[in-house]
Image (tube, rainbow, N blue to C red; front, side, top):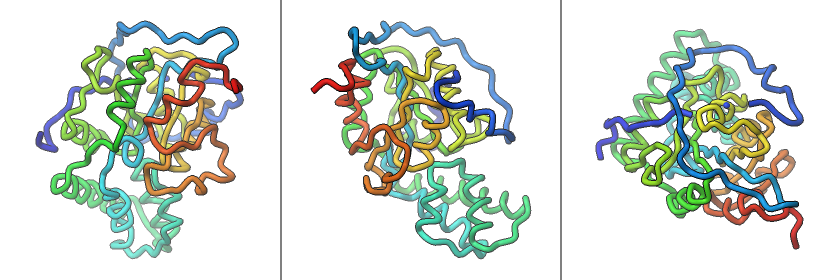
Length: 287
C-alpha cells in the first residue's frame, strides 16, 4: 500500500493517583479536534479477587516499540539540527527521542549551541518532515516482530490498544496505512486508535496523549491504564499520567538505560506485556 494513502483512524483521557503533575504542563501549539463517538462492543476485562488491577487500556509508542522504522527517525532528527549548525552527542539526541519533534528540534538546536528563532525552528522542522517522509517512501516501516500477534492477544482479552506517538498525523497515519493497520473497536481492526503529538496541548513527557487515549477509549481510571515505550520520555509520560509505566528494549536503548528511571517494568517487547501480572489478571505477588 502506498505510504501516502490515508488510513481510517479512530482517535481516542482522567487524572490519578500520586500526581497532579499534569497541571504543570502548559502551553499549546494546536487545537484539540472534536471527539468522535466510541462504542465498545467488547466485554471489559476482569480481575480475580485479590489480583492486580486489570489493565483495560494499553497505550503503546510507535517507532521502536511497535514499529521498525529502520532508525530513520534518529538519523533524520539529528540531521535536521546539525545542518543548522548544531553540534550534539548521541546521549543528547537520545534525551529528546520520544518527544514531540518540534520541541525536540528546538531544544537540540539550543543544546547544540545555535541561537535560534521561530523561523529557523520551523525551517528545520519542515525539512525533518520532508526527509522522514522521503525515507519512509524508500523503506516503509514494518511492525516489529511479535507486535501484531501481541496486540491481537491483548485485544482478545478485552484490553483496548491505542498508539501514542511523537509523530505528527502527517507521518503517523501513512505509516499505519503502509503496514495495512486499521483502527476501530471491532475484532477485525488492528488497534483501537491512535493519538499524535500534534493533537494535544503538548507531547511527551507531558501526559496529555495518554489522557487523550483514555478519553477516546472510554477508560476513566489511570489504575487500569498502561503506557509502554522504548525511550525515557515514554516512561516519564506514563509516570506523569500516573499510569503503569513500562519500558521495552526493542528500540535502541538497552535495559540498563532505564536504571534509575522510575519505571514499573522493563521487558523485551510488546508481546511480553501478556506475561505481566497486571495484564494477566493474577495477583501481583503470586509466586
